[in-house]
Image (tube, rainbow, N blue to C red; front, top):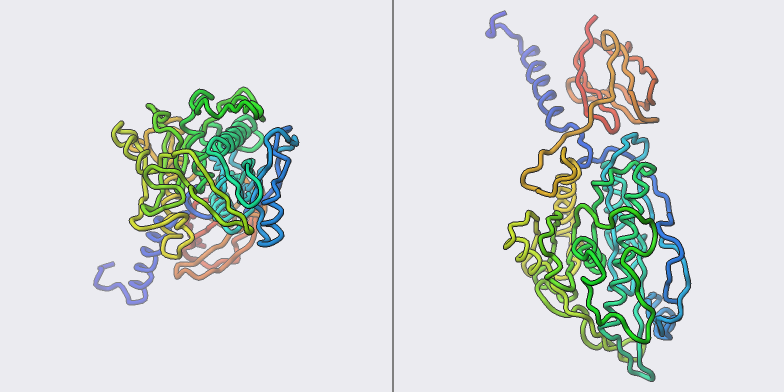
Length: 446
């Protein structure tokens, strides 16, 4: 047929078909990038047992709780402990049958004296749920909080050594969480070579310390106080026999205690920080330092000097180590709660993790030279004449069929081995979307 004799109706159909095919090709759902799954949450999973928690609450904790309704974990002594488990909340993609998935461990903020694994005031729960919906296995961990306070009457203080010891305990806990994921990789459906960290504030400090601090001697010797229990090895708690260090980290306004521990470490990191952060300083300084009025008393906090994202970025850049940054001029601490930055920060974090998780060579740490894989091979199988379809994996997965104009003509749920009849559809071109699978197009002609 001559192109000059195509009818208006035929021209419309041809253009619509082309547009639909192009749209389908460009918007195919991709693991680790798009929301594909519902999410199942399992609370209070033990990842280490018989871990010593400080157990002698300071009177300031009780007073602040009664007056402000907020729990800040202050203690009177490190010599009184109670052995308890370390717990995580585990988020998994519902109906996902992939056996080697990337995993993300999220550590909340709270200056080592506050915060919780299920604290909705932070983005912890949101990040865990959103990433699990994209195909990751995620965990929000409860590391040990609490620092000892000295003084009496109306004047109290926290020593920088005591703060450093609290951070070290947190590093032990994050390392235990990484080992739990790696040791139980088969049971959890996790790739042991794709375990990543996200940390917020104090959680970011712990995440970076996990990446860069390899042994006890990487920490200051002054932390061994004569009147306090020995802190023991970094890997003393939880699973043994596997590596403690994550394969990548996202540090939201984080820092490290010693810039020299970076060395030649090539682990991929994303550093997010505001240049006007006065809580965890962007460059170098003592976080949280100064005096505070609390419950009618004065609390003076001394903290160790920390090296922020600016310093870490400078070192990695000088060493030509691949990494990514998102620094915002004038932004303060935890600016992902600001409406203007909530989505940009999340996009930066999720895109960085997608690049790591979707790499064909998951053992590589060179971001620049990674080859990025798309979705797994489709489990959708079309029957003879496209009169039915089935899926090779999954249970109760949602599906939807759209016609050439984008109108939904059929929806439902399907499980592996079940045949879905399509004989009710008219002749035409359609797009089939199944939860967790790349969309495909098919035609019916009789």
